Length: 137
Image (cartoon, rainbow, N blue to C red; front, side):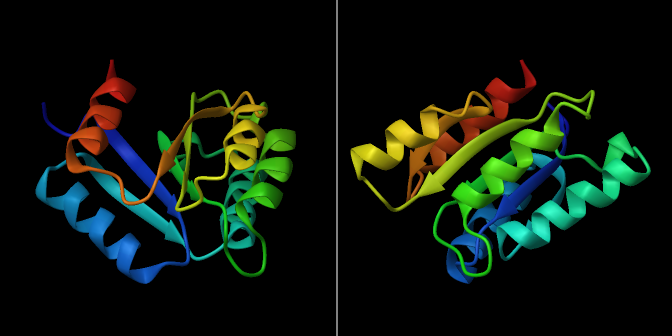
């Protein structure tokens, strides 16, 4: 299994978490490339720029989205991303990743049909690897 996932994306302002995920992805060779955004606005600007010149290779295969971030949080990002995602031909798998165990957050996340699953931090290594394998299948 050599680099089944071309590009993974993390939208999260938690540096420690981001570095941990980055290390796992590198060590386990789960993805060839990784893009990281500190908040939803940075990520949204990136996706909107791609829309402008439909450069599909720069679209991630998988997105890990945190809910609580400054500037633009995960919920705001989801609301905006829903509006533009149909312009992309590529299938993008999106996981909400949060330390919140509030059932309302879980329900709200599942109300977006582009959300594949709701993961609670910290994510176990095995679960993480399975996500990447599943995304390839």
